[in-house]
Length: 151
Image 1: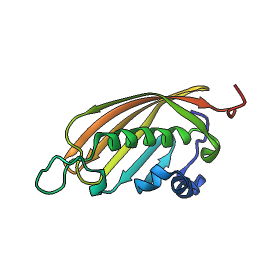
Image 2: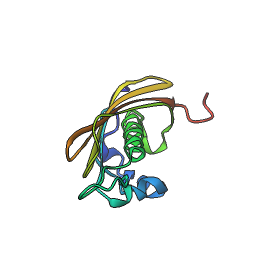
Image 3: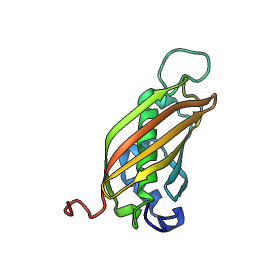
Image 4: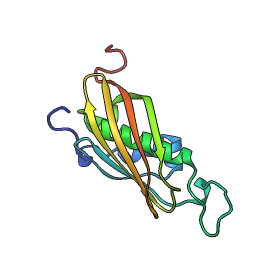
């Protein structure tokens, strides 16, 4: 990672970034921590995200929501390795999700950058819900450190 990656306070625009991206605002995503190659994102329990399996009480969150949370937390963690996170260009090239148990309640994803090179970034992510660790994931991203035209 470059010296002095961005701190959450260095990217106060993350909230407007979330609002500008429809699916992120629909998830009502909250960035709890963003610094030094780590992002912690939280989404509150919402019946709209549940997989309707007909259990008593809340049903588990749909796996697609969990996968989106893993992918998004990874992107935020990798953004923190750029000088200007809001202007970072990156795209997912690989997303692997292992579901460990049904994801219930509020979900909290912790993404840690394993490597952020000149053109490739790799993260590990854990997602915890009300019943403990619900999923783990690993992503690989293409990083465009010189912008989209700088290839």
